[in-house]
Amino acid sequence: MFLIVIGLNHRTAPVEVRERFSFSESQTREVLEELRNKAGVESVVLLSTCNRTEFYMFLSKEIARTAVIEVLSRRARLEFAELKRYLYVYTENDCVRHLFRVAAGLDSMVLGETQILGQVKEAYQLAHNCGTTGRYLNALFQQALAVGKRVRTETEIDKNAVSVSYAAVELAKQALGGIEGRTVLIIGAGKMSELTVKHLVANGVAGVIVSNRSFENARELAACFGGRAVHFEELYRWMEKADIVISCTAANHYVIHTREMEKVAERRGGKKLFLIDIAVPRDIEPEVAHLPGVVLYDIDALQNVVDANLSERRRAAAQADRIIEEEVEGFLRRQAAQAVVPTIVALKKLGDEIKQKELRRALNRLGDLSDYERKVITSLVNSITNQLLHEPVRRLKDLSLTSQGHFYAEAVQKLFNLEVTAELPSAAVKGKG
Figure 1 (cartoon, rainbow, N blue to C red):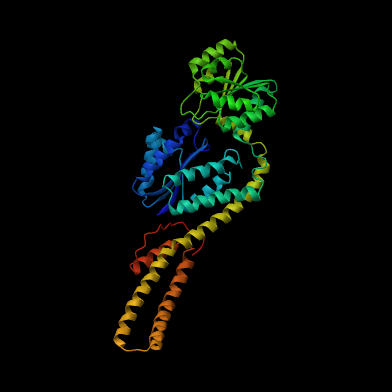
Figure 2: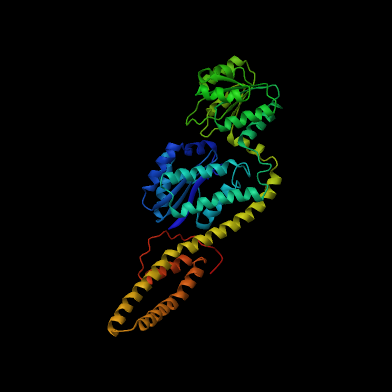
């Protein structure tokens, strides 16, 4: 058995590829079920955010790795060879380290951002509810959440971090030379939209218009900030009045189309309209960028903005990396020690069975013995068995912490013909043994 993560993120794949791997909750459940039924896939967790899609798995067969990539290729409608260009694969210790870095915000577009920790928790809980986690992934993700909290408590990694919504507003300010007195149309009424509106109001916009497929949700968000809610069917008409449009819906298809935007651009008479699409999958057809008077940014355009205050956060990141290395080693030690427990239990059980069988045989042969004599013989047999097993058990525990620990456990199982069915990962602490 071995631990592996297969994924892609904002560094390895552009948004037009990442959006193919954006999974809703229902789609996540379907994929988890499909992968669980693949031969060799013992457990799996799917982490899907706007900037990453990652499959953390515990596999019993190497061939399962290819089977998983084939599932992704089919679902994303990408050729196998094309898909592999964008993927990264980490196994064993590197997989543990990667997840801990993700949970700590060290692998995010926005270094130190806090939203990812909640997303990791939600991904784990969903997989756990679907019954696809297993003992090892349970331990791994629970520790990852603890590591993420520790890093934020002991460092200032998130002190100067900016969110995607904040970056979108900063991008708008750069594009227009300031947004005081401007009118902004927000498409979507979820958490990201709420945070975006909060930043807009703080920067002095003249008006906020909110549109959403659920008019009630749009009205609730607009009311919180003194804005105006408009029906989704009237979206294009209100674009004619806006200076900036920021779109962040949860739709799995485009909601802003080129044909309709041509009419908007024409009616605006050449007045510039700035569109910022921070949704994944994207909300706005990319061809809209070619229309006269229209400037379109997608989420990948935020990179320059999120680099603000990066030097301070990089110093905190170095401290966070030291914490993560400590946590990785500690986790692997605990798991390696835990992995040999079933072998030790089975070995002691075998020793006890042999002891009891031979003790009964000896006592029957000796015939009439006093209670004292029986007690002495029983104590002798117990002492021999315990002393015989003590050193092998102690050595097995010590060796479990080395890079070859799992091989020793497997050797003991084979030598004594032990039946052990527990998960036995090969991940171990490197640099020992």
